[in-house]
Length: 238
Ligand SMILES: Nc1ncnc2c1ncn2[C@@H]1O[C@H](COP(=O)(O)OP(=O)(O)OP(=O)(O)O)[C@@H](O)[C@H]1O
Ligand SMILES: [Mg+2]
Image (cartoon, rainbow, N blue to C red):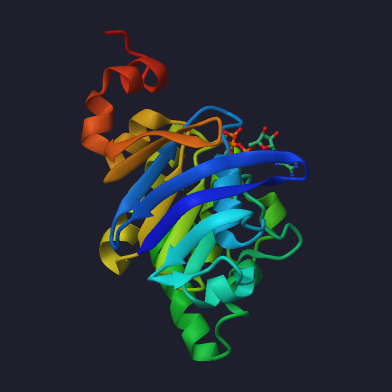
C-alpha cells in the first residue's frame, strides 16, 4: 500500500531523513520506534505532505504522492494524527469531528453516520459531544484527534505517539481501539510509539529508526526477540 524509497527531507539546512526506505502492506499495523530526535515525526509529516520531499519517492497504491498537496493526500485516503493532541480548543467535540470531514465529504447524512461510528469506537466522546475540547482530559483529547482523523474515512492512518502523557489505563484503551479500527475497518496503520513493549505487541511489522535512517526492520515478533532491540528498547539485558 505504501512504499517509500530513499526518502530525504529536512528543515532548512538540516537534513533529518537520510534515505528512508520502508513498506506497509494493506491491512497491516506497522510500528516505528526510535529515540527522541530520530526523525519519526518528520517522516510522518513528509508522508502527509506537510514537508517537501527532497529526494526519493513515496508511492501510495502505486501512485507517486511526492508532488501532491496534503489535501490531495487526504482525498486519496491518508490521515495523520499528529503528535501532541492538537484539538481545536474552542470548538466542542461534535464540531471538532465535523472539521475532520469537511474537506472530503459534504453530505450531512454521511457525516452523521461517520460520527456515529466514532462514538461507537469512543463512547466517552458521545457523552462529551457538546463539551469544549479544551476542557477534555488529555486522554479524551487524544481520542478526539484519532476520531477526527477517522472522519475522513482513511484507508491509511498514521498515529504519532498517541500514548504520550496519558494514564496507563487510557493507553490500554486507546491501543485496543487502534486494534479494533484495524480489524473492523481494514484501515492500514502506521504507528510511532515510545512504548516499544506495547507497540511490538500491537503491530505486525516494525521499523527501528535512528538518526534519520532505518536501522532494523522485520516482523514485530522477530524484533521483540532481537537482543539489540531488547537491550535498547525493552529495557532487558541479555
Ligand atoms: N520545525 C523544525 N525546524 C527545524 N528542525 C526541526 C523541526 N522539527 C524537528 N526538527 C529537528 O529534526 C530532528 C528530528 O525531529 P523529529 O521531531 O522528527 O524527531 P522524533 O523522532 O519525532 O522525536 P520525538 O521522539 O522526540 O518525537 C530533530 O533534530 C529536531 O530538532
Ligand atoms: Mg516525534
